[in-house]
Length: 239
Ligand SMILES: Nc1ncnc2c1ncn2[C@@H]1O[C@H](COP(=O)(O)OP(=O)(O)OP(=O)(O)O)[C@@H](O)[C@H]1O
Ligand SMILES: [Mg+2]
Image (tube, rainbow, N blue to C red; front, side, top):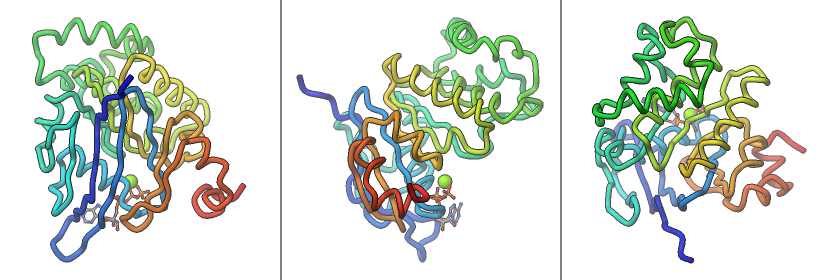
């Protein structure tokens, strides 16, 4: 059986200004049914990579292929239309809108099925259903992260890009988020995520990449990276 290569990033270069290049030639791949985690020190360019893939930042060189189709530099709404969802690291909910309104915003490209899709997600995330009329700004960090994920799922993506989904959450919320990520995968969505909680993320990942200073430092299966002493010392805070 051949696995479909969902995303192939080759030699990607990008930055926020002409003078400073942040991504200096990145290569990564995501296959169908995979969870792939990107780790690396602060400022390595992890969020920048996700943004460049999702079309929030225009690469200066290199390419992004989506199921073999050239999508380099395509805008975010185009990527959403092609089945890619994105949950940003910060400011990932509309604070003044209710939970229900946040979810509705996630379906802006496919309004016809909004209500049924929302009901499906409320069934999946009962905690959000109970708070459907609460403003997202009033929710805890863990609840907001669920809103952000559910909003991204409203568009029925086949690929989800998650930037630090467990950042700043309490241990029980971290558990909940990682369980949800597993469930999302089990429902057939492939996931490319960035995580500081590297050990937890690699443990549930098929493969991982270590980025350092805008380039690939290491790659391997989640298990191999977790057990590589060099990676442990350099990127996982020792063993
Ligand atoms: N909007 C921006 N404008 C200019 N420079 C930026 C912007 N966002 C990030 N940078 C710079 O780009 C570099 C990479 O940032 P990025 O956010 O991609 O790192 P990261 O690996 O996600 O780090 P962290 O682990 O802290 O989230 C950093 O030097 C950062 O200061
Ligand atoms: Mg980041």
